[in-house]
Image (cartoon, rainbow, N blue to C red; front, side):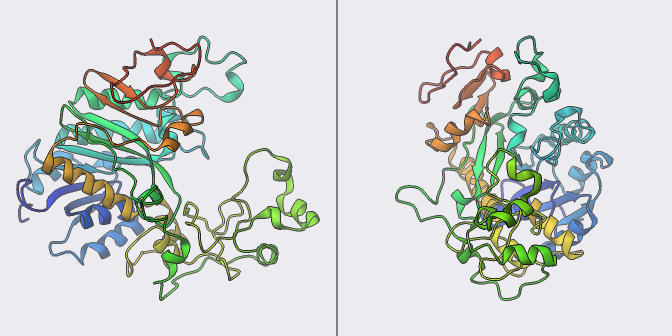
Length: 439
């Protein structure tokens, strides 16, 4: 194999783990980085990555394997890098142990128990200059050891062990990265802030070998003096071929005939509304995504892998059908012409699980600025919504250096940060609930 270009030449090299359908990698590539190798175990995703690789001047090495079954040092040597030379190790372990729709078992989940130690072995084998990780926002509040809600009692977290507190998984992971001399910034990234025609919030961690962190990129859309958020209309205007379309049952087709563009179950006649929602009718919570039809002039909601499901529906504004595979890809900001392997259900799943390429591009450009111009002395302003959302997602934004942690969010008594010293940086404020301790 021809050795890969060294990091001191144009085209910063990337090894991608848990590559999925390649959304993050396409964005990094568009920013100016070079995808050297991709590791992915799903057979359809691998075929999708191979199709993308054929369009590159030097094809990417696509490896179908579980991470824990592959020798990272052999791969590092095969692509021509010594330890400490690789610019970027991108991609994070899958989200299922942390998703709020699952059981949120953290490291008790067998997937996390296996994958995160294996991931750290790859970090040790490559010792890269930077790490880039994307995951669901539930990763930030997950506990190392989950205690079921019914077992917590009225005075939770009184007497709770540190491993059971919210955010203890994140602190464990940050400690692991700090011990490897990385400075880390983390937070919730809103994809629409970076030109993705979709509202999609995900955790992003950027770790760099430096005594100062690489900040998360500042929003580019939707703010004062910025272009407005891109809409579903913007996303679909250039879709020439629909591709596969998830079928709707006759019953669902009938229900959606009664819902206008931008509407949901609340627009149904009362009797049909009660029949359609069933037991969920009396349930609390927003439920705004139930039996939803999309609106042309707003960003799409989060693109998920089941566009026909009543709680995650992606129904076209004008037609009684799901968004097609190619329309979902456009709403995720995949470039036109990307071909997804497998059957239509697999294609929807690949797209729904992907990192939007435009978000990947913004992250790649931020890293390139960091490498080329050095750390910024002052952190860009943290969007207010990232701080105000801390009531339901404690720990949503902060950064860590070898000497300590710095937070932008409330410190709640049930959160692990309430039991540790947290420094107050001079250029930001740290709020905490009344009566809670900083140490």
